[in-house]
Image (tube, rainbow, N blue to C red; front, top):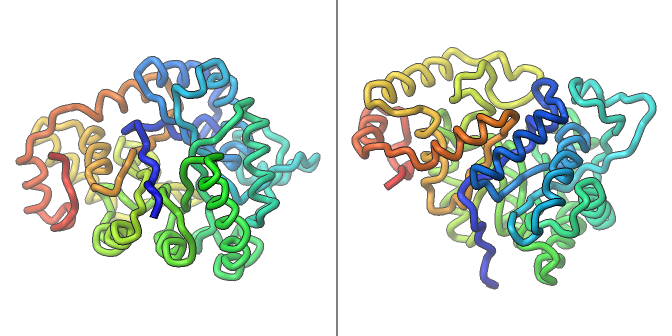
Length: 334
C-alpha cells in the first residue's frame, strides 16, 4: 500500500452557504467571508459543482486564484455535470442560486474527467488536491437516475478507477466518497482503493454510534480516513433550526431537540461553548483528518477557527459519557 495523503489543515471552509443553499448570500458577502476565513488562517476549502449549481465554485475561484496555489488545499466533487438550461428547471433544487445550470449525473470515466475539468474552468485554478464522489448514496435515490446500487458498477469501473489512476499519477492527492450515508463508504473500501472520505451527515455529538462501531474500524483496517462535514449538523448544534439538508430539514424530531438541549445544558454547567465542543469532538477520532464547516458570513469563519482551540476540561467529556450523551467508545479530545 502506498503512503496515504495527510491533510495539512485541521479546519476547512465548506462551500454550501457560499452556494446559496439555505438563503441568498451576495457576491460581496461571499467575498468577505472567504477573505475572513483566509485572514483567520483557514487554508483548506471544500466545494462541489452541486453547491449553487456552479455558483460556489465560481465564488471560490474569484478569491483563491489570487492566492499562491501551493498555499491552500482544495477539494471538490464528481458525479454531477452541469449544463446551461434555459428552462432553469433545477431552480427547484437551488431556489436561491441565480445559476442557469441543470445537473446530469454521470459516474463514468469520461464524466469524471469532464467534471474535474469543468471545476478547474469555473474556479480558474490549475489543480484539485482531493476529489470526492458525490451523493452516490441511498439517501439520494429520489434524484439519481437509477438506484445507487445499479449505478455502482459503472462508478467502480469508471469513476473510481479513473480517480485511482489520477492519484497514482500525482494529478490529485487523494479521493473518496462524499456522501450522507455510511453504506457507500463501506462498499467503496471493499470494491476499490479510496483514501479519504467526506463524512457529510454521519458524525456529530448528536449521532455517531454507527461510525464508532462499524465505519471507523473498517477505515483503520483499510488505511482510510475522513473529513468530517457534519460536526454541527448543518448548523443545528450552533442553534439553527435546521438538521442536515433537504426540503424537510426544518422538521426536527423531539429526540434530537431534547439531545441538543441536554448537550447545551451540560456545556453551560461546565462553562463550555457548545460550538467548540462540537467541532473538537468531530476532530477527535484518529481517523479524522479535518473538520469542514459551512461558512456564509465573515464572523462564522472567525468563530469556528477560534472554537477549535478553546480549552475544554476532561471532566466535561466524562460527564457526557456518564450521562449517556456520547457513545462509550467515542473518541474525545485529549
